[in-house]
Structures are given as structure tokens and as C-alpha cells.
Image (tube, rainbow, N blue to C red):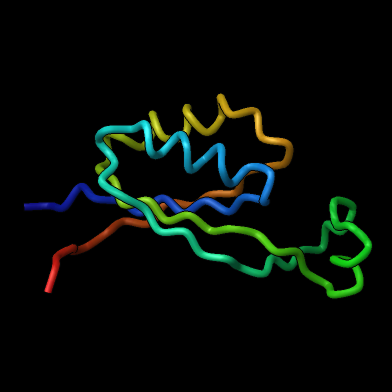
Length: 101
């Protein structure tokens, strides 16, 4: 039997983080997610403040959401509706297996 689980990973700035978290907390089908602080490097420095330009990166947040394939479009639609101040970058990865040990 083929697993229909996927991992949606989104990268957001601090201004968008709480909106995405609030959205995920309202979605009953999502059992949980993981939030990590990451350093984002980009050739597009126009959005960086002075400290970020000096450091060469900006602090961002990565949110990983394990979900079923049929939930994917609702997740993206909810994030589109947030009208985030900056882009929400994302990617989807198939999940071969999940479990608890």
C-alpha cells in the first residue's frame, strides 16, 4: 500500500511566523508541526536590513508540516490567504514511512 503522507516545508520571516502558526493550529486535520530557526542566505539582498546585509543572511523560520496528500491544497490556500508581508517559500517532499518508536 502506497503512503500518501507528504512533508510541506515552509520558510517564513518573523512577521509571518505567527500567522502561519495560528493557521495550522486551527486546522483540525493537522496533528502537529515542527518550528525551527534557520539562517537564510540569498542573492536577493534588497529585503535585508543593514544588520542582515553585514551578516550576509537573515534569520528565518522553517515550519515542517506532516500531512496527507489531500490536505496539501487547503494548506497552501490558507497560507495564500494570510497575505504575508514577504514571500512564503515552500517545498513538498514525499514521506516513505512514519512511525513512533
